[in-house]
Amino acid sequence: MITRLPIGQIIVITITSILLSLILNVIRPDGIPLLAKELAVAEEIEYDSAIEPRILAITLDQALELYQKGTIFVDAREPEYYQEGHIRGALNFPFFLELVFKLDSLQGKNAPLVLYCSGDECGSSEDLAYELQDEGFSNLLVFRGGWTAWDSSGHPTEP
Amino acid sequence: MINFSQRSVIALLCRVILGIVLIYASIDKIVHPAEFAKAIGNYNVLPFGLENLLGIVLPVLELLVGICLVLGIMIDGSAIIAGGMMVVFIIAISQALFRGIDINCGCFKVTVENGGHQVGIRRIIEDFIYLGMALMVLSRGEKKWELYPKS
Image (cartoon, rainbow over all chains, first blue to last red; front, top):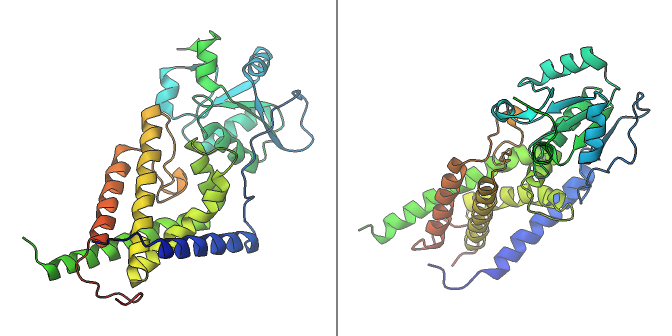
């Protein structure tokens, strides 16, 4: 059993990794920013086709406003959770391409689209937003509070 | 009771297996840094967007520690870092399970489409096994089959 903490070795390995990884991140074309940016919160929602593709976060009030205007909501959670309960009228497709075709045929790629998952702490709605952006959808709104906020404030749900 | 040289052989096996696991786990993360950073972000444990920094550094640390373990370079330091990583992974996955957030593990493959798994109890058990391996390496008997430092 080792009797002394090999601090020198730990430092050498850690520092080498940090330097190597940062250098790699700078030289590779798909390097990422050192700090992740939070999604910007939408100040106002554009209903016409957006000029440039964007993904914005929206609040419960904004989500409700969009809902009342008939905007399509997409439930980004796994189908099991969707079946247990979801925002009334929200879509959920286990297969991504099915979702893409459905959305495209319903309202095209530039109409606003609200995505949500279980609450503030899930990432699947944001992940889905980036995937949809890659498919050409341009007006993506991530509803942060998600299912939890919606359900607890008594807005329409089903089943 | 296992004797001294058997213990050395077991420690060598643990070292090589743990090293290969770490190298394997690092590859998909190094290839997809953005996706891995997002997977870390989904755990919701890091403030200030630090998930990107961790997403950049952690895979390379895993790779380097894995290579050191397989080749026998700075084994004590590598094993301690590997063990420490396992403790962090166990805590991160446990808190995700405990809070009931259903997220992609980001353990071996960073995206579900690519064959990755959701967080689950299985990953925690595996990480405990790897932690045990790291402890076996640290408690190895004689220091042989090691490139650096020679004792």
